Length: 111
Image 1 (cartoon, rainbow, N blue to C red):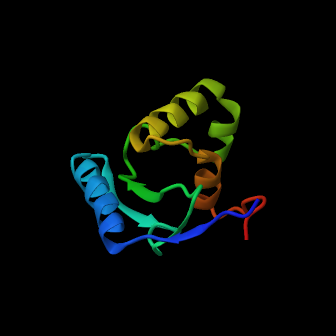
Image 2: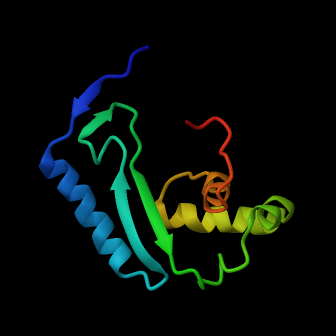
């Protein structure tokens, strides 16, 4: 089944950005956030998600000691961190890719 590409209007994109901006500006632990992907390009598909990159303060307690080894070995920490982030952005995320990228490691299945 083909997904239909729909051109997203500037108004729709601006509405998403305004909601994100309102939310992230109130978060002390966040340095910056930005929209990327199909919504940012205004070329979303019928099943497109909203891609958001978020940069947290490096000394933020939930991330200060997080590395791939810690993430991989501590199942409770991993689950708690993922749920916490998913609640913030209100969608499912793959934090493993975020950690691997932050360590400059290759992400399996990526370009």
